[in-house]
Amino acid sequence: MFAATVDQAGKSNNRTMTAVVVVMAAAWNVWHALAADKPVPFVHPAAAVSIVLTACTVAIAVIMAWLQVGRYAIRVLALCATAISIATLAAYVPESAVEEIGCWMSGTIGWVGVLLILHWQLNVVGGVLIGLPSLSFAVLVLLQQPDHPMVLRLFSGLFITVGVQVCAVLVDRMIVHAVHTTVTATQSGVLIAAKDNAAKAVQAGRLRRFAEMDQEFTRLLADFAQGDLEPSDPAVRRRCELAVGRMRRLLAEGDTVDTPLLHELRASADAAERRGVVVELIVVGDVPAIETAARRAITETTLVTLAATQSHARITVLAESDALTVSVFADGSGTPLEPFREATPEEVTIDVQEEDGRLWVEAHWTAPSGSRSSMTIRS
Amino acid sequence: MDSPIRVAIIDDHPVVIEGVASWLTGDSRIEVVHTGDDVDKLTADDQLQPDVVLLDLSLHGRMDLENVARLADTGQRVVVYSQFTGHGLILRTLESGAREFVAKHEGREHLVKAVVAVAADRPYVGPVMAGALISDGGADRPRLSEQERTALLLWFQSSSKASVARKMQVSPHTVDMYIRRARQKYEKAGRSAYSKSELLARALEDNLVAPEELNNDTP
Image (tube, rainbow over all chains, first blue to last red; front, top):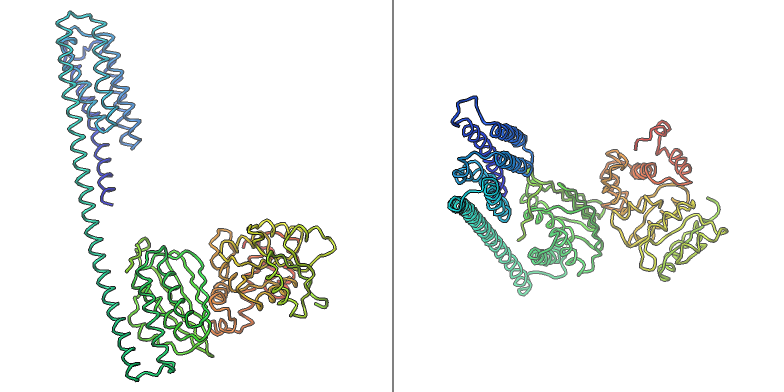
């Protein structure tokens, strides 16, 4: 999320910078042309053609940027403007241009081009920064045929200008790389800290529940040892079955599976099947991610009902994207669900029907508003 | 129906054929006239003409819905009997022309009821099939009333119409009518079969469809 926001802001800034650069380039071109020896409105025809063509191209580019047309098209247009300038000015080169080529490359073409293509692929940037000056240099040398010292002066001027521009691009890449590295490191740190906190909380919760289960088993075994509990008593048997079911579920909660709810329901069913209850488990729909507290409330109703089942239970799961119903239909009686209702999260409701030796318990879950995409938290 | 219902069983496991034949012939209304593991042999015999074909969806390790379509296209009343109970598969089976779907774990009671109902061109929805119908999220699914949907849902959950009736506070007969009416809506929206007119006639006879609904093609 953070990285996406940073990227979005970066793209927006790039668009703005491109538009600003293009407008500045247009203004600079017009000013430079008009600031010739002759007063306005005199402008040499070749320069005038260059100005008009460049201005038209720039105007189109600005409109496209405003309409948020793809950056690729704008850059193509910007390069067209540059190429037009080169071609037109090369056709008629003022006498002073040969000496001022370094200034011309750094001002009119070079730095504007650098800003426009700053974030292109490095090989493309390198090609443009070296290719365009080389082209201009070749055109000027061929058309003007300057003397040897002039060629050397021209070459050294271009070399210095292009060298500075390449350095600027490299510095920019280093800054961007450093920023990305920092952002990634910060993100990783935050993520690791969050996972660490979550793991600690989960571990603490599991240790607490294991301690509770330990106490329950210790009490049961102590009562059996002292003869306070009668194994044939149905209430005692149910208490033992519940304890076994909860321990089985607690162990299942630690497993990494795609659908924890189904895994835990199967674990609950398994505990019942071990004492001879026939359990059908039928699932319709794709089970959504459900938080641990709600999941535990759902499986608790299933556990309690299965503990009260005599011989056969039908568990059905009907799942939708934002709702789920787990129904247990069984032969049996006496489901002490009232204590669990009080501790049930508000997104889970429990409906119990008991009649003619049949138990029908339904747990309905509805997704809390705004949490449809929340991840399941395993403990 | 005076004469017994003539049933053909197509399955590739002899033990299943023996068991199912035993279940069906235990009911005096049903006679098993053909057993085999090949749909082609059944369709090749013009003299056989069973009232109902009980078809295992997976023959010789190959899941083949085309068998359902082939039999339905020849006018056979097909009841699919399968261990595979994915709701998507059940819906595709019905779309292919099967009259009903019974899961193998649903047992004798549902199987016999499904065969008898289908032979009389009446709908029967088992609990597993009810679960598939309520899970149908297709754009062309029929529009069920609240009672029909609730009855299907509770039937899927409990497989006891008496319990559904108690929960809905209606009679078991009314529950049965809601479920059959829901199935009838799927029949109307489903694959065209030669006996569709018979299904419609039965639906009218059972008051599952009102005559004025017949002109309304909207599911």
